[in-house]
Length: 58
Image 1 (spheres, rainbow, N blue to C red):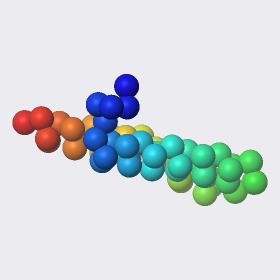
Image 2: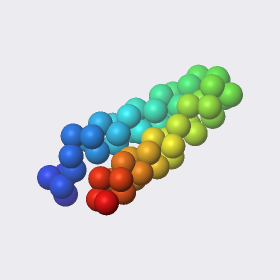
Image 3: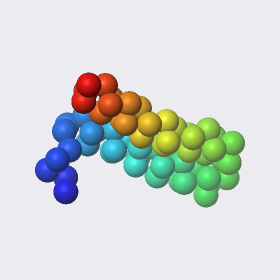
């Protein structure tokens, strides 16, 4: 499955995963506002990856 991913795809996926993990860590440490702020990066990073794929395919 991961053979189809380019380096950019892998980096964006790792960035989204790390921001999710960091957001959860902040949330459980009691920094709820910071956790929500970082948590909204996840869909933005993934959407940016989809955008790059669409640009590349045209």
